[in-house]
Image (cartoon, rainbow, N blue to C red; front, side, top):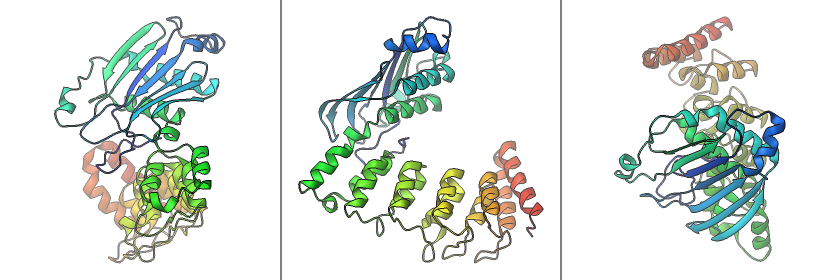
Length: 351
């Protein structure tokens, strides 16, 4: 999904400030799957991007119940004007189900945009009409699931093909002399920010330098964009860490700050579970220090040695104990995670 991180230089980023209008004209009672398929004919989701201090894409994208996707771009986008696409009925039905399950219609308050607007933060909103009910809120301070529904909508619509570049159009333009190098690194950054794997693959196939001053792998890891990461790895992006510190080594950073699937992609790409950065940090030490028990289990199961020390002599267990001391006070759930890491490491011979 697109990340909602803000950046003064990333004009094409999707932001947390997008407005979504969701309309589902169905009976008030939750319909059966068979009934719901018929009622999806009147389902409609419309996402529109607002403006803020940072330039952001100006567009409206609509998904209808029959799977039709409508796009209108008007500012700071690759395509200005109208475009049309298609998604499957199954995907539309899944999105409608997620809207129902979110509890959006039971939200109290409208989350007025004024506090965010006053500090130049782009603001949008979410309006839902579903099962005979309707609710509209601003996304300024709204619960996280509002942005999650927003992300799901714009990713399902594949809005990046018009905001960044359509893959077929890009191939055609390259064939007619469009030079990838003239648009790097910005177009690759934008493709990663939107998790647009098709664009990344085309750019890599036509000479985009994946390694060097721009650390595209790290960008994908920091945003937890799985499709972008997989495509970069398959296209030859360098994940090796011998000359990098832990904060600039994507597999080690992933073990600490990303999801288990992200770390697994590096292992599947050939990364040694015991690889170390220039300062001796390993994926296991980093995961243990941050209390990521599932990542710790994955690494140990994949062959990570539990007693390898870093340059300061700290092993994974020592790092977990230090992490518990520093972060365990954040709450009982955090402390529980660290204790799980500590117990697991000790049960596997950690000293």
